[in-house]
Amino acid sequence: MGVLEAIKARWNIRKYKITLEAIKTRRSIRKYKSTPVGDKTIELVLEAARWAPSWKNSQCWRFIVVRDSKIKNKLADTLIAVSADRPNRAAEAIRNAPVAIVACAELGKSGYSAREPRQPVTDKGEFWYMFDVALAMQNLVLAAHSLGLGTVYIGAFDAEEVASILGVPEGFCVVSMTPLGYPDEEPPIRPREELSEIVFYDKFSVK
Ligand SMILES: Cc1cc2nc3c(=O)[nH]c(=O)nc-3n(C[C@H](O)[C@H](O)[C@H](O)COP(=O)(O)O)c2cc1C
Image 1 (spheres, rainbow, N blue to C red):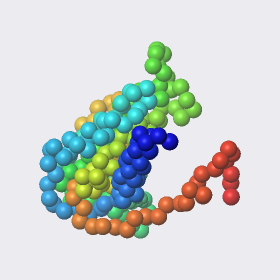
Image 2 (cartoon, rainbow, N blue to C red):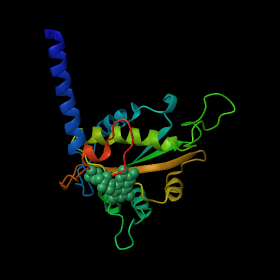
Image 3 (cartoon, rainbow, N blue to C red):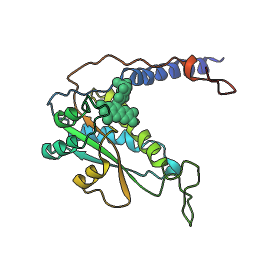
Protein backbone atom coordinates (compact mmCIF):
# COMPACT_ATOMS: atom_id res chain seq x y z
CA MET A 1 0.00 0.00 0.00
CA GLY A 2 1.33 3.43 -0.95
CA VAL A 3 1.58 6.29 1.53
CA LEU A 4 -1.49 8.03 0.11
CA GLU A 5 -3.59 4.84 0.30
CA ALA A 6 -2.42 4.28 3.89
CA ILE A 7 -3.48 7.82 4.86
CA LYS A 8 -6.86 7.33 3.14
CA ALA A 9 -7.39 3.98 4.88
CA ARG A 10 -6.61 5.52 8.30
CA TRP A 11 -8.96 8.41 7.54
CA ASN A 12 -11.72 5.98 6.53
CA ILE A 13 -11.33 4.06 9.79
CA ARG A 14 -11.63 7.37 11.71
CA LYS A 15 -14.85 8.20 9.81
CA TYR A 16 -16.16 4.68 10.46
CA LYS A 17 -15.47 5.04 14.19
CA ILE A 18 -17.31 8.37 14.36
CA THR A 19 -20.28 6.92 12.45
CA LEU A 20 -20.41 3.75 14.55
CA GLU A 21 -20.08 5.74 17.77
CA ALA A 22 -23.18 7.76 16.81
CA ILE A 23 -25.07 4.58 15.87
CA LYS A 24 -24.09 2.69 19.03
CA THR A 25 -24.64 5.46 21.56
CA ARG A 26 -28.08 6.52 20.29
CA ARG A 27 -30.87 5.22 22.46
CA SER A 28 -34.57 5.84 22.85
CA ILE A 29 -35.20 8.88 25.05
CA ARG A 30 -38.56 9.15 26.80
CA LYS A 31 -37.80 11.95 29.31
CA TYR A 32 -37.05 15.45 28.10
CA LYS A 33 -35.95 18.82 29.46
CA SER A 34 -38.21 21.75 28.68
CA THR A 35 -35.26 23.57 27.02
CA PRO A 36 -36.52 24.77 23.62
CA VAL A 37 -35.02 23.48 20.38
CA GLY A 38 -34.21 26.26 17.93
CA ASP A 39 -35.56 26.37 14.38
CA LYS A 40 -32.04 26.09 12.95
CA THR A 41 -31.42 22.90 14.94
CA ILE A 42 -34.70 21.38 13.76
CA GLU A 43 -33.71 22.24 10.21
CA LEU A 44 -30.37 20.44 10.70
CA VAL A 45 -32.07 17.16 11.61
CA LEU A 46 -34.61 17.48 8.80
CA GLU A 47 -31.76 18.17 6.39
CA ALA A 48 -30.24 14.79 7.33
CA ALA A 49 -33.63 13.13 6.77
CA ARG A 50 -34.09 14.46 3.27
CA TRP A 51 -30.78 12.95 2.12
CA ALA A 52 -31.95 9.39 2.76
CA PRO A 53 -32.11 7.03 -0.19
CA SER A 54 -35.54 6.08 -1.51
CA TRP A 55 -37.25 3.99 -4.18
CA LYS A 56 -36.20 5.48 -7.54
CA ASN A 57 -35.35 8.59 -5.53
CA SER A 58 -39.10 9.15 -5.20
CA GLN A 59 -38.73 10.81 -1.74
CA CYS A 60 -42.27 10.05 -0.64
CA TRP A 61 -41.63 11.32 2.91
CA ARG A 62 -43.25 14.39 4.42
CA PHE A 63 -42.57 15.75 7.92
CA ILE A 64 -44.80 17.76 10.22
CA VAL A 65 -43.03 19.70 12.98
CA VAL A 66 -45.33 20.17 15.97
CA ARG A 67 -44.49 22.64 18.72
CA ASP A 68 -48.00 23.53 19.88
CA SER A 69 -48.59 21.89 23.30
CA LYS A 70 -52.31 21.35 22.67
CA ILE A 71 -51.59 19.51 19.43
CA LYS A 72 -48.79 17.50 21.08
CA ASN A 73 -51.21 16.45 23.83
CA LYS A 74 -53.71 15.31 21.23
CA LEU A 75 -50.97 13.32 19.48
CA ALA A 76 -49.95 11.75 22.80
CA ASP A 77 -53.55 10.61 23.32
CA THR A 78 -53.39 8.59 20.08
CA LEU A 79 -50.62 6.32 21.36
CA ILE A 80 -51.60 2.69 21.83
CA ALA A 81 -50.42 0.47 24.67
CA VAL A 82 -48.41 -2.43 23.30
CA SER A 83 -49.05 -4.62 26.35
CA ALA A 84 -52.31 -4.56 28.32
CA ASP A 85 -50.69 -3.78 31.67
CA ARG A 86 -48.48 -0.89 30.53
CA PRO A 87 -49.30 2.34 28.70
CA ASN A 88 -47.15 3.36 25.74
CA ARG A 89 -44.09 4.84 27.48
CA ALA A 90 -43.54 7.36 24.70
CA ALA A 91 -46.83 9.22 25.33
CA GLU A 92 -45.36 11.38 28.09
CA ALA A 93 -42.37 12.05 25.86
CA ILE A 94 -44.63 13.52 23.17
CA ARG A 95 -46.34 15.67 25.81
CA ASN A 96 -43.15 16.90 27.47
CA ALA A 97 -40.61 17.28 24.68
CA PRO A 98 -40.65 20.76 23.14
CA VAL A 99 -41.08 19.36 19.63
CA ALA A 100 -42.69 16.35 17.95
CA ILE A 101 -41.92 15.35 14.39
CA VAL A 102 -44.52 13.31 12.56
CA ALA A 103 -43.37 11.42 9.47
CA CYS A 104 -45.86 10.80 6.67
CA ALA A 105 -45.64 9.19 3.24
CA GLU A 106 -47.20 10.01 -0.07
CA LEU A 107 -48.79 6.75 -1.24
CA GLY A 108 -48.49 5.25 -4.71
CA LYS A 109 -44.85 6.22 -5.28
CA SER A 110 -42.46 3.94 -3.45
CA GLY A 111 -42.46 0.42 -4.87
CA TYR A 112 -44.39 1.48 -7.96
CA SER A 113 -43.41 1.32 -11.62
CA ALA A 114 -42.30 4.64 -13.03
CA ARG A 115 -44.53 4.46 -16.12
CA GLU A 116 -48.29 4.08 -16.60
CA PRO A 117 -50.10 1.95 -15.64
CA ARG A 118 -48.40 2.72 -12.34
CA GLN A 119 -48.57 -0.32 -10.08
CA PRO A 120 -46.53 -2.07 -7.39
CA VAL A 121 -43.69 -4.03 -8.97
CA THR A 122 -42.56 -6.32 -6.13
CA ASP A 123 -44.20 -8.86 -3.87
CA LYS A 124 -43.96 -6.30 -1.05
CA GLY A 125 -46.79 -4.48 -2.80
CA GLU A 126 -47.45 -0.86 -1.95
CA PHE A 127 -45.58 -0.89 1.36
CA TRP A 128 -42.11 0.26 0.33
CA TYR A 129 -43.01 3.71 1.65
CA MET A 130 -42.49 2.27 5.14
CA PHE A 131 -38.93 1.43 4.21
CA ASP A 132 -38.18 4.84 2.69
CA VAL A 133 -39.65 6.76 5.61
CA ALA A 134 -37.75 4.53 8.05
CA LEU A 135 -34.48 5.34 6.28
CA ALA A 136 -35.23 9.06 6.48
CA MET A 137 -36.18 8.73 10.14
CA GLN A 138 -32.98 6.85 10.93
CA ASN A 139 -30.98 9.70 9.36
CA LEU A 140 -33.03 12.13 11.42
CA VAL A 141 -32.55 10.35 14.76
CA LEU A 142 -28.81 9.92 14.22
CA ALA A 143 -28.41 13.56 13.25
CA ALA A 144 -30.43 14.54 16.33
CA HIS A 145 -28.27 12.34 18.54
CA SER A 146 -25.07 13.82 17.13
CA LEU A 147 -26.42 17.28 18.08
CA GLY A 148 -27.11 16.14 21.66
CA LEU A 149 -30.85 15.73 21.10
CA GLY A 150 -33.01 12.77 22.01
CA THR A 151 -35.68 10.96 20.00
CA VAL A 152 -37.70 7.77 20.19
CA TYR A 153 -39.37 6.09 17.25
CA ILE A 154 -43.08 5.70 17.86
CA GLY A 155 -45.03 3.16 15.85
CA ALA A 156 -47.91 2.24 18.15
CA PHE A 157 -50.56 4.91 17.59
CA ASP A 158 -53.84 5.45 15.79
CA ALA A 159 -52.56 6.74 12.44
CA GLU A 160 -55.99 7.80 11.17
CA GLU A 161 -56.56 9.84 14.30
CA VAL A 162 -53.17 11.51 13.89
CA ALA A 163 -53.98 12.24 10.23
CA SER A 164 -57.21 13.89 11.29
CA ILE A 165 -55.51 15.99 14.03
CA LEU A 166 -52.84 17.21 11.61
CA GLY A 167 -54.99 17.54 8.49
CA VAL A 168 -53.03 14.95 6.50
CA PRO A 169 -54.85 14.71 3.15
CA GLU A 170 -56.05 11.66 1.16
CA GLY A 171 -53.21 9.94 -0.65
CA PHE A 172 -50.83 10.31 2.30
CA CYS A 173 -50.46 8.26 5.45
CA VAL A 174 -48.86 8.78 8.83
CA VAL A 175 -45.99 6.33 9.40
CA SER A 176 -44.16 7.28 12.57
CA MET A 177 -43.48 10.08 15.00
CA THR A 178 -40.82 11.08 17.48
CA PRO A 179 -40.42 13.62 20.22
CA LEU A 180 -37.37 15.85 19.78
CA GLY A 181 -35.66 17.61 22.63
CA TYR A 182 -32.77 17.61 25.07
CA PRO A 183 -32.63 14.34 27.05
CA ASP A 184 -33.45 14.34 30.75
CA GLU A 185 -32.37 10.73 31.24
CA GLU A 186 -29.52 8.50 30.23
CA PRO A 187 -31.05 5.05 29.84
CA PRO A 188 -28.74 2.07 29.46
CA ILE A 189 -27.88 0.97 25.95
CA ARG A 190 -30.09 -1.99 25.12
CA PRO A 191 -28.21 -5.11 24.04
CA ARG A 192 -28.13 -6.44 20.48
CA GLU A 193 -27.71 -9.95 19.18
CA GLU A 194 -24.18 -10.93 18.20
CA LEU A 195 -23.18 -11.00 14.52
CA SER A 196 -22.73 -14.77 14.85
CA GLU A 197 -26.46 -15.06 15.61
CA ILE A 198 -27.74 -12.95 12.73
CA VAL A 199 -25.28 -13.26 9.86
CA PHE A 200 -24.99 -16.29 7.61
CA TYR A 201 -22.57 -16.89 4.81
CA ASP A 202 -23.67 -18.36 1.49
CA LYS A 203 -26.88 -19.89 2.91
CA PHE A 204 -29.52 -19.07 5.52
CA SER A 205 -29.11 -21.21 8.57
CA VAL A 206 -31.67 -21.97 11.27
CA LYS A 207 -30.12 -22.83 14.63
C1 LIG B 1 -40.72 0.67 14.32
C2 LIG B 1 -40.54 1.05 15.76
C3 LIG B 1 -41.64 1.38 16.54
C4 LIG B 1 -41.49 1.74 17.87
N1 LIG B 1 -42.58 2.12 18.60
C5 LIG B 1 -42.43 2.51 19.89
C6 LIG B 1 -43.56 2.97 20.63
O1 LIG B 1 -44.69 3.02 20.14
N2 LIG B 1 -43.33 3.35 21.91
C7 LIG B 1 -42.10 3.32 22.49
O2 LIG B 1 -41.98 3.70 23.67
N3 LIG B 1 -41.00 2.89 21.79
C8 LIG B 1 -41.14 2.50 20.51
N4 LIG B 1 -40.03 2.09 19.79
C9 LIG B 1 -38.69 2.12 20.42
C10 LIG B 1 -38.12 0.71 20.68
O3 LIG B 1 -38.77 0.16 21.81
C11 LIG B 1 -36.62 0.84 20.90
O4 LIG B 1 -36.02 1.37 19.74
C12 LIG B 1 -35.96 -0.53 21.19
O5 LIG B 1 -36.42 -1.04 22.41
C13 LIG B 1 -34.44 -0.45 21.25
O6 LIG B 1 -34.02 0.51 22.20
P1 LIG B 1 -33.09 1.74 21.77
O7 LIG B 1 -33.86 2.56 20.76
O8 LIG B 1 -32.84 2.51 23.04
O9 LIG B 1 -31.84 1.17 21.17
C14 LIG B 1 -40.19 1.74 18.46
C15 LIG B 1 -39.08 1.42 17.66
C16 LIG B 1 -39.24 1.09 16.34
C17 LIG B 1 -38.02 0.77 15.50
